[in-house]
Amino acid sequence: MPDYTWRPIESLSNAERSIDLAAIRPLYEAWWSAKKRYKASKKEILDRFTTRLIRRLSIETGILERLYDLDMGTTEALVTHGFVEELISRTSTNMEPAKLIDLLRDQEAAIQLVMDCVTQKRSLTKSVLHDLQAILTQHQETTTAVDPFGNRFEIPLLHGQFKQRPNNPRRPDGAIHEYCPPIHVDAEVENLLRWLQEYEKEDPVIVAAWLHHRFTQIHPYQDGHGRVARALTTLVLLRADLLPLVVDREIRTEYIEALERADLQDLGLLARQFARLERSAILQALSVDTEAEESPSKALTAAVIGSLAAKFEKRKAEQQAQFRKVDTLAKRLRSSSHQIVEQALDALKAPLSQLGHPETAVTSGGPDYHNAHWYKSDVIRTSEAGGKFINFFEDHYFVKGTIQVNTERLVFVVSLHHIGREPTGIVEVTAFARIESIEEAEEREFIAHDFFPCSLEPFVITWKTTDADVAESYKRWLDAALAVAFEKYGDLL
Image (cartoon, rainbow, N blue to C red):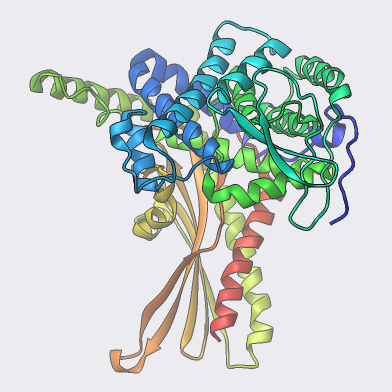
C-alpha cells in the first residue's frame, strides 16, 4: 500500500449526508417513545441497563487499542458488578489486576465526563478534548515515538496537550500513514469543532461517524486517539437521546477496515457499522426483562401486585393501534419476500437441472395462515444470541422456500418477528436455512443435517417505516441472504 499523505480534514459532504441509513431512522423515534415510558415507570431499570452498557464500552475500548486482554467471563462479571479488583484473576488478563482496574476506571470516568457535558449542555471545546485525553491516559506515563529513520523509542506522554512532534506510524507493509503536522493541529481542531456545531440537525449516526473519522485524521495528541474518538461518538449519540454504541473486540478488523475506507473518502462503511451497533443497543434496551430486574427486596405480596399491575399495563399497551401499524408493512414485506424467493428458486432450477429434476415450493406463514407457530425455535436460535427478546405474543410472519434435487433439499426461511418484552412497534427480519437429506432407512423422510443463518445482520422496520423507506434496501438484504443459502447448497451438491 502506498504512503498515506496528510490532507486537511473536510466538512460533512453531501455524499456523506446521503449515506443510506433509512432502515434505522424510524428506530430512533421508536426508542425515544419507549424511553419516555421507561423514564416514567422503570427509570431505575433503564439506568441500570445504561450503566452496564457504559461499563462494557469502557472495557472494550482498551481491548481495541491492545492496552490489555481480558477473557469474556471476567468481562461479563465486571459489566454486571462493576470494576472491582477482586473479580479479576491473574489468569484472566495479561496485566496486573490493580493496573487494569485503574485503566477501566479512567475509561469509565471519560464517559462520565461526556454524560456531564450532555446533561449540562456544554459545547465540545478544546478544553473538553484535553480533559478527555488526560483522563483516558492518566495512568500511561509513556508512549511510543518514531524518528525520521523509522526507529521506535519511548517518550514521556503529554496529558491534555496537543502533540509537539509528528506521530506518523509505519504500517506492517512499510507504508507511512501521515497525520496532521503539529503546526496545523490547533487550526484543524478549530475547524472540526466549528463544523460539528453546524450539524445538530443531521443524522446523529452519520455525524458520529464523521466526527470519529475526522478526529483520527488529525491525530492531535501523542496517544489515546481511538479512545477519545469513541468517547466523542458517545457524545454525539447521547446528545441525540440515543444510546452509546460498543465497538467490541469481535469486530476490530471490520472497524479498522471501515476507518481505512473513510481515509479514502468513503465514510459509508463506518456509518453503516455504527448504525448496526446502535440498532443492536436499542433492541437490547427494549428487550430488558423489567419484571426480572425489579429489586428482590420487595415483599412477596407487593411484588405479585406490582407484577400483575405491570402485566395489565402491558395488555393495555398491546391495544395501541399505532404500534400495530408495523404489521401492515410486515405483511407487505412477506408478500414481496414470497415473490423474490419464488423467482430466485425458479432461476436456480436451470443450473441444477444438470444434476436431476429440481422441485421447488414457496409457502407463506403467519396468523392469517394459522401457522405462525412454525420456526419459533429456529428464530430464537438466530436472533436471541444478541441479547434481544423475540416477542411471539405479537404476530409472527414468515416465508419458506424449498428446492430439492435428488435426495438433498434446501429449506430457506425469512422470519418477521417483533422485538421487545412489551409492544414496541419494532419488527426484525432474519433469514436462515437448513439442508435436509432423504434417508431411505427412514421411509424417505427428510433428515436435517445442516442449519445456518443466512443474514449477517437483521433487517429492522418500525411502525413509522414506510414502503419507500426500505423497498430497495430490503431487496438487497434478501438477495444477499439468498446468495448465502444457494452457495452453501451448491457446495453440498
